[in-house]
Length: 462
Image (tube, rainbow, N blue to C red):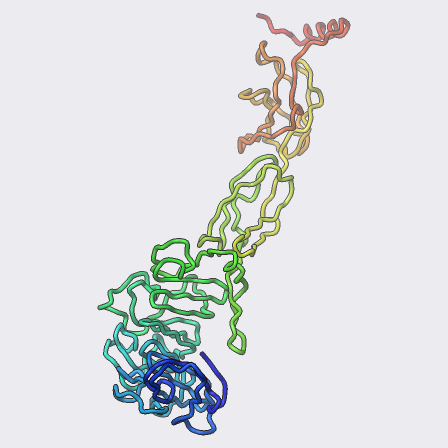
């Protein structure tokens, strides 16, 4: 909690019997109380943090004052003796002032003016980050991982402690019984993490904001993702009760949570506009990229932030898609955000629209009209028919000579056009590619065709 008021107008509501707000009470306090005792005149309170039976104030000149229980050295007063009535100044490392404070149940952590970190209080579970589990009765500096790191913000729970550095890296120390630090493993309560250890962040993302509870850690990244680790269940925004050992993008449980959308950005005032990320779908993220009209094909889409926790999804195209280029759109329906790959999928025309004659006899020359034809296309009569000698005229025209009737029992055949390299057959509208062997019923026409039969040797000798 942060306040920005003058000292003699700071009022807090507390209950208790120890002097955690500057005076000794024998009954819970539920009315405003002036917090003046022991504080220097003319200073402004910039931050307040409270722990079990104790309160710490940060003043605008960087000094700290505490009151209440000092058990286990939680106020950093040099002993475990509770503070007297009123506020007592807390000693900082030599030459330093405080810029940020945070408290846990029984610990105090401070960011100093040079970006270094100091802690005091209960050392159980490794909360102080000094490599031990011993209590510490004065504020002493704690090493941050890496070289030249400066602390930017702090979070404490009952038995975990996190620091975000100015470079966006989170480090943690304390209990790891539920892998709250996202290290991929758990530690028993008797073997805590006792030095600040960097938390692995997926995809090298930058942390915008984070928070922690006793067995759970949540992280918001600058690209708007909500990551969670620790004990499974609703506190991870997860549909599974399984624990998570590493930071993983959270599921969304309700449309209301889904409305928390937009990129995470930190403004000059420190305010955070946060939410969940839109999916991404870049070039090369669609396979295959084309099909023929009238067919369905299964697409594999590769990108980021597909839900839940997926980077690859599949879908089936609609056979009614018309020839041409089509946008590929992936929508996370739970948060209403989409990614579009303009012109990312093409439907090609490959079909038969008509025949120059639908009734004919062996030797007749038939032109097939359609689309998507190539020089490797061949005509077939009927399912399983032989590939016929075919003349490629253009992408819309083929020509073939009617062969001998394949079967006396079958008069009408479907004309197929097969692309011999891929084996794909062109589609046709109903009846558009039906060809029939038939004699004409008019006597004069029968005579003319009988004469032609003799010329071409039809029917063949038995």
